[in-house]
Image (cartoon, rainbow, N blue to C red; front, side):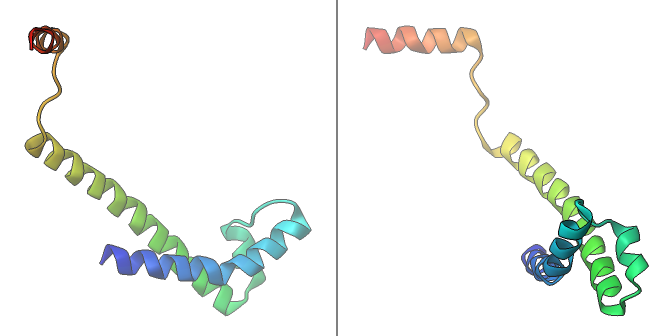
Length: 96
């Protein structure tokens, strides 16, 4: 699901890129939602709305994925050694 959404996001972004670049060249800034709405171009407004919704969804999904990954890492990966434990291991290595 995430991969498909990411592909769709990239496709929407690419379809908006030409208009966005032309706007930025003319106005010396990136367009915002109000600029898009002011055009009243149906495909542009629809595509921008889809792009915005999908971007928000992906950002939320990314934070959820990071949280799940962090939880899994805490459960599955070994705990980092503390300073005293590191020194003890160094002295053992030195003896060998």
